[in-house]
Every structure is written in structure tokens, then in C-alpha cells.
Image (cartoon, rainbow, N blue to C red):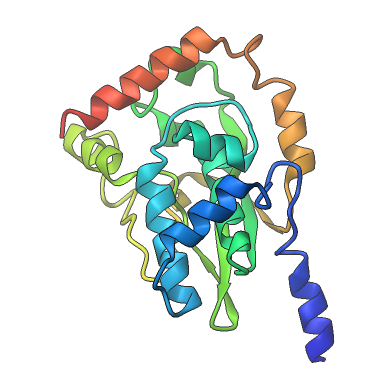
Length: 225
């Protein structure tokens, strides 16, 4: 039974095309972040807060985890992908949990032009689950602390909608439940989906100028806290 369990868990430790945790920059960052940590929980917490706040929420195209680390910003897909890459580089099993969300979760958070271009239902929103103390735990890093403070201050979303963005390494954290319309379950890899999304989330259909304008808008929000 133990061997079977280990075999089943191994798929949550594999590198993939997008989750390229064998890239040296991912390995180096994972070990730099967790230097001195004694437990997997401590390591997972260090990674969580790094991805949450040091990779601030910004719109982007879908890229490999190593590229997101280089860019130092990302959206739900790329932040979750980097988060999983760093955890797997440390030997901590991690997986994607996929859901469909109402696009209202981003109203006021991104610029109007970018928001209007989104479908009413976002069908490719993932967050991270990691395996600690013999159970899977959700640890969603979507919005960084500065952005959430601005969201509260500007009345974009309330604390009833986004209760908290803090994680203790023991209990589930999912910040988008207020807008969830369909749960698509957990996945060891979402590479196939990411490749499909790339077909319409690209510079031709989502121009760089709109992306940059929206990201400037989001960054200005942070400066108003």
C-alpha cells in the first residue's frame, strides 16, 4: 500500500513543459527561500508568501514558470504555475485546482478595456494545493497584499467577498469562492489547457498595449493604499 501511495504521489512531483522546475533559476530560488527551514510546512509558507507578494498580480501571456520568475509578475495561471514549480523543486507534492469564475472578480482590478475583453465566465482559473501532513491544502496566491489593501480601500471588493489572503500552512485558502461557478477538480498538470489558452491569449488577440495599459492601472491602485 505504501508503494502504491508513493507511485500515486509521484505525478505531483514531475516537471512539465510549463512547470519547468528543473530550470536552475527555479531550483536556486526554491532553496534560497527556504534556507534554514526545518519542515515542509515552513518551506511551503516561505514559498507561498514569496509568490503572493514578490510576484504581484499583473496580466500576462502564459509562459513557463522560469519565465514568470524572471518577469517577477503574473496572473492566476502563471502565479499558480510558478508556485507549484517551487514546491515541486523542494520535493513537496503540489497540484492545480481548476475552476470557472465570473469575470466580476477582476472588475476594478484591471483596466476597463481589458475587463471588457474577457468572457463573462473565466474558464481557466487555477489555484494551488500542496500536500502537507498527509492532506491536500489549498494555498491561493492570486492577489498580493498591496493590491488587496487597495481593493478594500477603494471598495472594489469587500472583506465579505475576499475574507483573507493569509495562509497558515494548515487550513485551506481560496480567495475566489465568491465568484466560483464551477469546480473542475484537481490536476497534476494543466499543460494541455495552457496550450489551448495560448491560442487566444496572445499578442494578436490581446495586444501588448492593452496588457501594459491594464498593468499600469493595477500598479497605480497599489500606490493609493
